[in-house]
Image 1 (cartoon, rainbow, N blue to C red):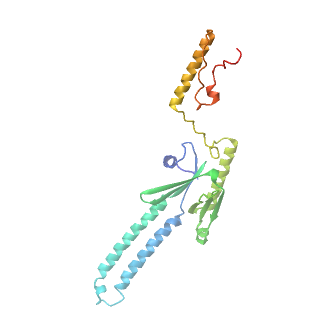
Image 2: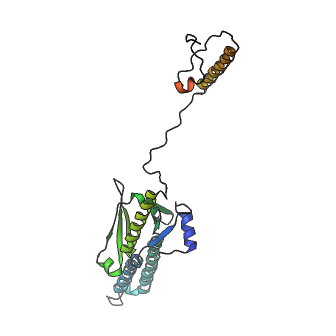
Length: 258
């Protein structure tokens, strides 16, 4: 699925993906997802207006409701307008939801409310299976639900009412296979499964100063030995340092033959 350069730049700014990561496809809800919301709102409006007209028309013109027929129908019409305006909210929220497939990840952009958004991200390496479900209406109209299964105890990813679900599932599986092939060929680097780097050892400042003082004493002793002077061997280095670090440059034992 081709996307415009403007949408490509917008998605790269909004989504947690690299600048050089290619977007393979963007998928939105099927038109029936919006039509179903409008259908519910319109049915409620029809019911309200029908009740208002029925209550003011069933009995003769002498009853109280019939005398205020215009006001009752006006109130019902006002409620109907509010209901239609309220229907715009879920339609707008659904229009902001989309599934984005890249070379390395599968992302779902959700809009739970007018002032909140949510982005779910799944690395293609963690994808184990993709399944498609279609009911009677989905088969007739060409939409379906996609489930992306993940290993272990991770939650599966559900994408509802997508057009051409089998083509979308095929694109996801193809991207997963290409990404795994790139990992095995070394074209893509990943840190998944690698051990965490070892923490750097902590050095006590006081012990480090003692170690430096010992090194200076060793250097001074070597100079005095070179001059033929008899000197006393310095104390051993601090025990906190390993033998490989503390014995470098240490003097020979005076009991050993020269």
